[in-house]
Image: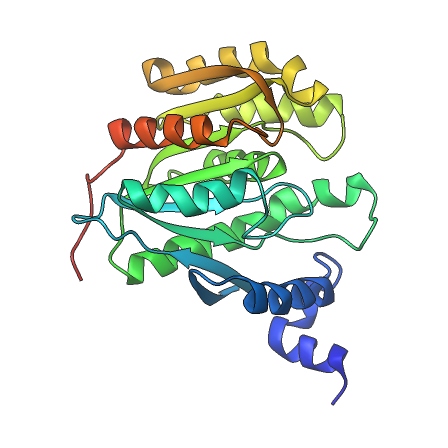
Length: 265
């Protein structure tokens, strides 16, 4: 049986026009061989299989769970922001579920990734459903870069009762587009849960250019539950400043979201 047929059976043929499933499969196998901590979970979204990396807290009681979405072209244990949050937040009482988001072909044009913002919704829903089966109903969603735009799109489309807090880190689009940017700010303005907008003073140009509009939109939606922080000296990956990033997020989600709905198994 050839590799493509195996992937069709595993993931479903309907989504071959979206994510590069072969590339996802190769990355999944590489990560399973190289990642020594955490548990790999196979999830299903609209008949399409994808992987997630679960990292459980060792503290008691658990405060809840965090769903983590990587940036464009990344993976669930991507170095930098994602890896740091995945390793550090469990020490603050949070279980982590880091998702593989749709991937474009190698060297794909950025426009291909913009379409994945919508494709991300079933994967987020599958992650929430999985956490519900684990009796973790107190959920925070954190997205980095394009992953933050995916989170925003998801939150704008439904009440998402289980979501107690949202963190967007260096939120951006796959490529500059005035209409898409306008829609992003409209979506941010609909989020009523606590919302934390984090970015670096040396972040990507589109992140810096949109800071004021994000502030206005966040205040419109979340009101006093909105916070925006610019971290001086930080770039898009917070190189050399990851401890500050993880500490800031841990404190914020611990204050606004911890323990409101956590059930013991």
